[in-house]
Structure formats: C-alpha cells, structure tokens
Length: 204
Image (cartoon, rainbow, N blue to C red; front, side, top):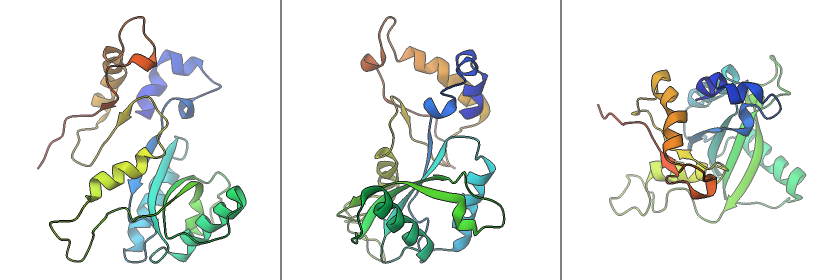
C-alpha cells in the first residue's frame, strides 16, 4: 500500500501531509511483550518496524500486567503517568506502539518502539480462555486481534489482512481504483458504499 500510494500524483504533490495523513498500517500482535512467549518473536516485529521505519507502521499489542515483560510494563506505566497523570495499576490494556525516532543503534533493542497510546480494559482480549482452550470460549483470537487494532484505526476505509491473503504488489495497485467504485460520483466520504475491504483469501 505504501509504495503504491507513493506512486499517485496527488500524494507526490502533497508534501505536507505525506503518507502518514493518508494510510496507517496496524500490526496487531496479541502476544508481543508476553513473558510466556519467545523473545525471538518480539525481535522479529521490532526488526520489521526498524526496516520500514520511513512508513507509518504501528504495532498494537495486548497488555496483561501479569505476563508483560518488564521493558513493556515500564514503557506503558511511564506513558500513562506522563501523558495522563495516572500512577495507579491496570490489569489489561490495548497498547499502540510505533517506531521511536529517537532510537539510535547501540541502545537496547526494546527502544526501537515507543508507546503512542494506552487504552485500559476491564476484560482480557480473549474471554473464557483456558488451557486447553475449551469449545465454549466466548471470543476468538483473530477477532480479538482485529478488534484491538480497530480501537486505534481513524480511517474511512479498513482492510483486515492475515497471512493467507494474496497481498502482493500487483493486488495493492488495484486498491486506489477499487475504492473509487465504493464512493458514488459527486458524493463525499460520509456516503461511501463500503467500509471494510480485502484481498482474496487462499487457504492452503
């Protein structure tokens, strides 16, 4: 998406807003920063954000005070105290992170990302989750991931994506033209005919 949008003349002409004012990519990763899961997975996510740091890419993670790594817990609590003057404790939260422009190589790798917003929650991301997961669990992991990202999504169009979707460059080139079909001629964004779009999904 980012590379395709950069090709559009209207985007090239708008040097003030840039891509950040047009599109945001949210990576919803419910186990980021959890002590119960391998650190290598967190390192992969940070490596991805570092590699594409010139693009507006955000990381949404599920915060649980009982299993959060110390580095994530410190970042979340410092943000809550600094931005919202809150020094208490909350158990669950949806956390939005982004590339830390003040990061310099040689600093701890956890500093590649910074907290952008914290939304405390009363309930965990997945309700009724036990080990092993019972059939009667009230919510499902993928839907919970999408809902976590949706809380931070400000756009007029949303696209839910996962690993099974054919999201290669050629498909992304179609999106700006497809979006025009969802907005009747002479109308504005308040009267669009679709809000959620997606690529075809291939199940292997």
